[in-house]
Image 1 (cartoon, helix red, strand yellow):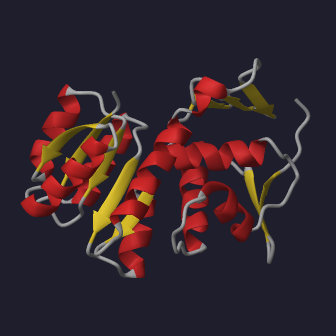
Image 2 (image 1 turned 90 degrees about the vertical axis):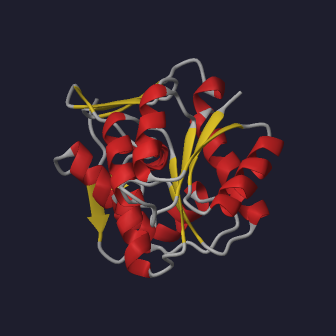
Length: 225
């Protein structure tokens, strides 16, 4: 059974999320503040973290930063902070999704299930798990990424984005195309979220691997392997 950690200081909402996710077949742990959340995360293995931002002791941004430094587990922010700046900051912290309160529980569950499916992609990959472009090597089965022989730890969304680009060297992907491919559930997602994920990828990978084609989108240049 896959496990989800809910970090939310409002007990009624925490219990409601617990009830819905349990009914979906997930095993749920709950924390009411950032310190408790990191304590649980250090003791147990989780497949997903649902994380409020305005929580006591350590806020959600801080918790996410710690988690992402040591794990690729998907993180979904769940917050009343609906302004653009907060959402962009969330994605800059390598969050995999950002849901604003109030929200639709059916849509939220769909988001959770979509992230879980992406995390399970390796189970249905083809016979050759390696995807290579120049000195970028991606193992689809293990979600391992090597850039110039150095390992790079990516979030699920970052991994999917990089894999999409590497599978199609030289092809230009507009922001709209990437949103359609990688954010495939019903949600209003700002195109600048793509820019934020590209920024995170560039920071983690280093070098000039991802090119910006002005006025069009992004691509990875063709390389001789």
